[in-house]
Image (cartoon, rainbow, N blue to C red):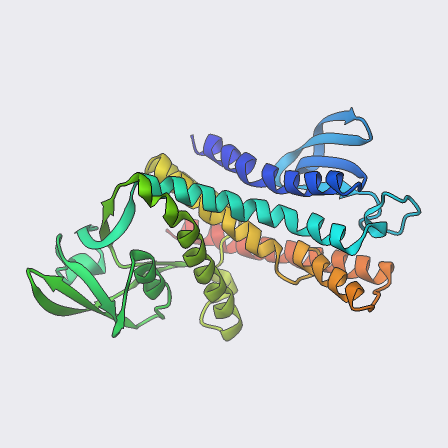
Length: 330
């Protein structure tokens, strides 16, 4: 079943991303040479007008290859000859679709129920259970900071460093109590073991954008942690770790699966907008430089993108190695 869920996830996250680029290119009059799902050797090809549509062996990405995207072209409909506005629209479209999908999925998940600050229970053999946090307790604050929702509690847990504890303020039977609770750290996962109560309502649909924003803040804090050293690159997850997480989530039902799908979609959208060569964000930087009348030679831009892609592949190998190491170790 995990394989099926992974393929479904691939379809609902990668296909719309590339479709966003494709539609933006076509509506901008830019010629698309190939639209592909997957990477590696092609297992299916079909010509459709001026575009080759293909499905490739490895479900780890896809691409929308435009005329003049990585080289100079005399074709008037080439990407390199498009207006700056069209270039920007095309480059941002994929990430926009991913973020939109994340918002839709978060909204759908919220309708089925959003976590409240009331504790519904604790997971056996976790810090929350050992510190006697009880069902019915209401979480008020962590480390002196008042919390408004359970996502803020998750953020507080995510910020904890090895050896630190959380000072959790609770309301129990009308009385205010405090608990010093350690956090279990397993790879990139930080576990405290609190199970929140769930509030179900159709009106929860409005929480989709808020959940998207809250998760976006967590993603940027993680990125910031990589630069400050509070988070190691080896703590990140690649395709293997994602497959394991999807397998675990799918075992907990569709709601859990769509929650992680939303989070992964948001990650893909934000990651692609980072100003790094080979990513959409890196290409957007070149468009902005062009807007400022700073024209980067096409060969230099292509070289930087190739180098950036190589570094991303090395990062992929690095995180995959640590994913496998964690799985074997556990």
